[in-house]
Length: 127
Image (tube, rainbow, N blue to C red; front, side, top):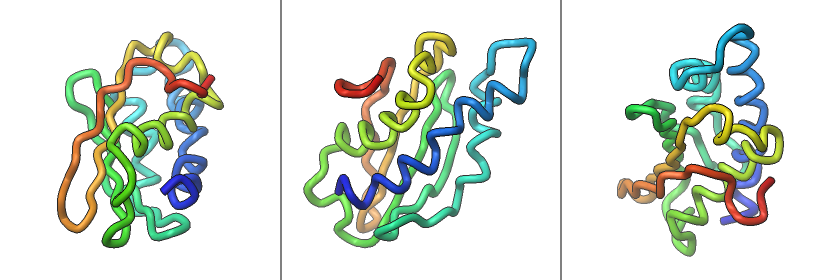
């Protein structure tokens, strides 16, 4: 799973900076982050991993990813989340602290949707 998901994780690492650039005089809102990530929806990455949706639930940025049948067979929801969130933390380690926005990565495999954990800080080994 790590190799397949790495390309998708790397593709979104500049999103925090893009959202910040959209509102230079004010702290970015959840709406700014959702809007900044809309361009990634539908993109297919190495291994067939795809960002299916980017939404907000209250103050949580929700990213839904999918892939070919069986893509997350050996991965826990925490591992899928960590793979993507680590990308944010590598380029914007202050993302969670400065935005006060949480994140959740939901994943779909063989039509079964699994909600990931709500992330409030960089994963271990991140920034």
